[in-house]
Image (cartoon, rainbow, N blue to C red; front, side):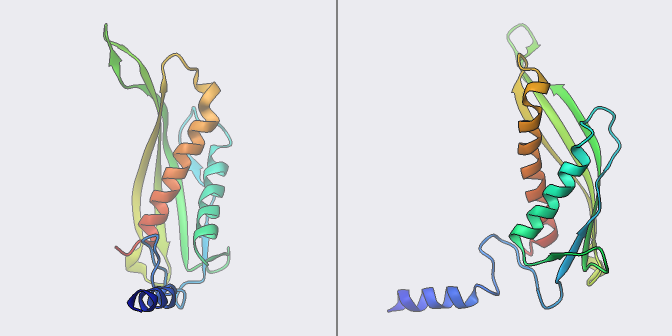
Length: 163
């Protein structure tokens, strides 16, 4: 009987608590806006800003009840790609690198128009390791996809995680 009661309470409380670790007060917030990401790097793919912009829009759309709106958004995101480069990471025998790392760093501003003190500016770095014998062009799309997933998760959690 206690188990059934516990399940009932969890289902009932589902509107107040998120098992994903974030909570959004939908009585205060109903919409969001993501401006097209800017790019200050010289060697990233030309489509990277649009790709990352769309990925953040999609992350918020899928994982929240917020609606995208350009007019008077309750929360707003602006970002700049400040790093996109490949570095050598793991030296192997004979002091040559055996792993290359694609690094991407976003400078993000979260503007909360409802509760202005909750706004912030933060950097979000992430990377993708690949063998030195592999050409970046052959794995770049997959690498960007993996990096983007983690960056969007980190940005989303920073904006909407109350823990």
